Image 1 (cartoon, rainbow, N blue to C red):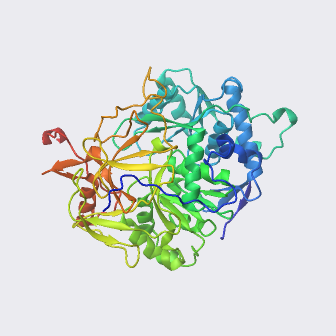
Image 2: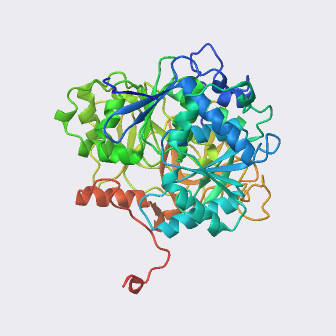
Image 3: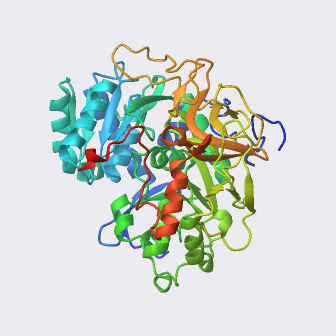
Length: 551
């Protein structure tokens, strides 16, 4: 690896879009190419531009050229294949990876895909009770039936403890950055070129999700769904041949994994990567990385965090005019984060059309609906809390021009999440499960080629591809698959002008005088009243509550 300092109101009930990216090649997931090759084909020809740039803790940046990275990935792919019993046994075998964002995590994720295993990304230890972390990892290993867990030396003890706790026959493979680097610098001999099996199975990965309110469930993602979803991400970004990515979102998270890593490299784009803790210690470095990158992704709190922590005088020398797209998801996008962030970055050349609101779920691989590169932000403020099956009462509309509205106690602003792709449909369901007219509040339901077939690893004896909810299972407030192929998201929302607004989670809402009071609205009102930044408080609901239980 070389080291370098970088200086550088109708009746419409579903919505769709016919936008097609202006590109000479068909977008990924179009069905015109092999979906496996669309994802891992770059390993045979990484191109001249592709490279991985990694943030160092001393403030510098390390670079790994594409061909060197491929050699490290293929070396790991062979080790995984051998550990799984050979190339005939590897396809669709779950391989869990426990690692903080970095070289080994990147190489391990791609190696699992390359050898045909089903990648199971695990959240590495962070702040929290060590025993709870071990129990969580053990639970996923047990549910997934993973015969192999890959870990970096810093989290190897957690991996071993989890294997002992789950009681299964699981091999622990410890891999260090130094080993990957050594393999990256070596030319392979003729006996060492295996690693690209003819059969990579049906599954690309299994994403374990707790959603917002439930226990972890495994969502199997096929190669077809992954190619479709990353192709949709390309279209919403308007991906160009000169684009490059930068991100601090953790790689085990679907936004960091699918939205960044598995989109960037197949498109031949360079990737600059920071760990989340590096971003939290020095958020200016994200802006620094965006002086040579064009695309990124982040949750809403990241914008607010940068605005609070970074002083204008410390970034006065940065030119952000290249930064043209940021997918904003993982949590509701809040204007109280957007406004201060734009005040800091617009003077540095950042166009506000850079911000692309997105709605995603693990059950939909990642992206479900989003704005598009170059579109202005749009937002509405409701005059009253929404009522299921009843038109929402819009008090105010912001078209993205002029000052960003200030959120106050008179209502939370909801940001427009755009339109889905042409082959993805959304509808809003009333309490009885039937579709309601545009403008009415209800549960968001969707159909898409990106959807999983169900929670494959949801329990012992479960049918691997069985739907997990009956079609008459309405307004439950949890994400579930219906028997007719739809995903019932458990989110409350509304379609206005053919565009989606997601207002909050139904499972945590309370009903007052026939109106649905969302915890997100209470959170926003308390935050505004007390002046507490977003991310530092949370509103929760109790179906039954005895104050004595907190004594």
